[in-house]
Length: 213
Image 1 (cartoon, rainbow, N blue to C red):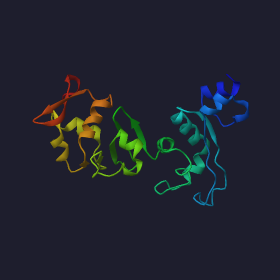
Image 2 (tube, rainbow, N blue to C red; image 1 turned 180 degrees about the vertical axis):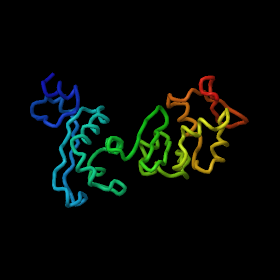
Image 3 (cartoon, helix red, strand yellow; image 1 turned 135 degrees about the vertical axis):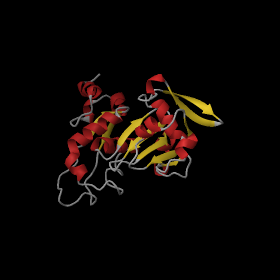
Image 4 (cartoon, rainbow, N blue to C red; image 1 turned 90 degrees about the vertical axis):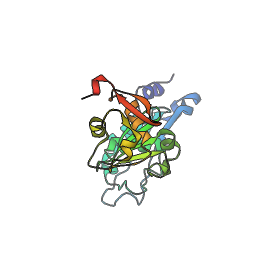
């Protein structure tokens, strides 16, 4: 193992010389590199610092990228397609938004939870989230649910009657979409003490003793 590769095993870096790596090590090397373009407002004249990392360390690489490039990133309107989005893998871009504070992202076995700064929450089927990113944020695809600002999923869980059924969520004005993913989130997130069950043909969750009023 070369010294640069050993450093990469520790954490993503900004100062790696590919020529010093062995062929096998170079095969595992990834780079987050963004070239300056017209998407960056003229008031910011700096360059993006590139981040070198090993395959599998995408989350850590995104964290380091934000730490090194926060000023540049904050000059970009991420509500529209931008130079970073077009330059890095989608998974890394999602984590960049997370560490930048534009999203709050949590991934579980079968669902992904996302919270926007304005308070809107999404729970999306994980396959849909990772493999079909352009179709994540719609309530008509049967693979995601949106919770509007003003009420949080945590509050819904706390205040809805036990058990919580699909129909309870469908009847709530702030909830729109495939509500079974919200129930799946309750089961997988780890902060809710509940168990899945079926009630009159509907998917539901029952709060265990510790989560009951």
